[in-house]
Length: 358
Image 1 (tube, rainbow, N blue to C red):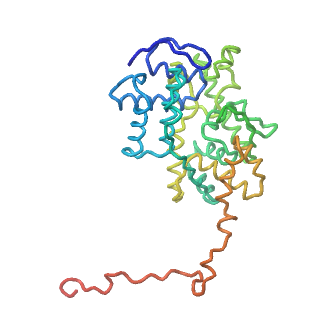
Image 2: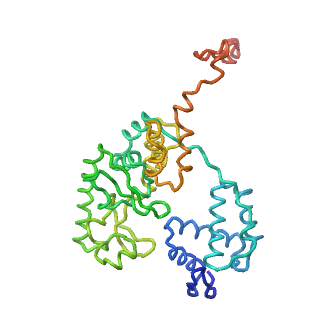
């Protein structure tokens, strides 16, 4: 698209002259952001540039940024979280890629964050959901609910992350780059052993044909070049097909895809007759809420979920059935308003005569 001169970041590391989006990707990878963050930031910077007639962002400023964000909010009616993500991408471009800090960057308006009440399934709904989901996705759904993992954390589990002797699952590089330990649900032990046996077959096939090893952290690959080919670093939930790595371009086996599981979970929710919006995170919400209802300390739940602050975990106290459904409504105390079947009036057309007196 365009080239630009060498710029410096706060760490005094200079980016080589390159195209705009390539420079953005280089900086994001240098800061060790996730692939999803990279895709989102590149998307919004591209949208911003196209909105202003493909002018270079260096020639734009605060008024142009606000005009773009106003368009998103008033014309496209995006959610506040989407609005904030677009703003974060543009601020990252100016601060980390261009290395500038302008007065308008701190004064630009930010939309108020909306914190929705989490969608929680009852225990019966979870059981119905797991009963009808397609067999190849049932174990992942069970791990999400049984251990409270995020979907990305579950799909990126390695063979070595499941410790049967200690009955724990090690979550590495969770949200915010934090590691944590969660329980290994007893009903899943044998099913996870079966999944490991299936993954071992795929790993053996890949080694026999000399396939490029699975993706591992770059620093580990430099220190232990053969680690990516070893069994402990293989995926617990490997994909059945082989694809190209979006960053390195290597042809290798990835873990299963989040979109595939998400669609399967939506189909299962409809098949189970659940009218709530069921996503992978719904199972995590249900895990936390059901533990709270069972009397588990909220600090312990915070550790299991990997929340930095307990205030994030406190939101689940608002959806406890014991606190909400157990509270009597004042309507129940009014005379003549006892619970009973609703009596509906007859349809408005019941007494009407059909044309011709029929």
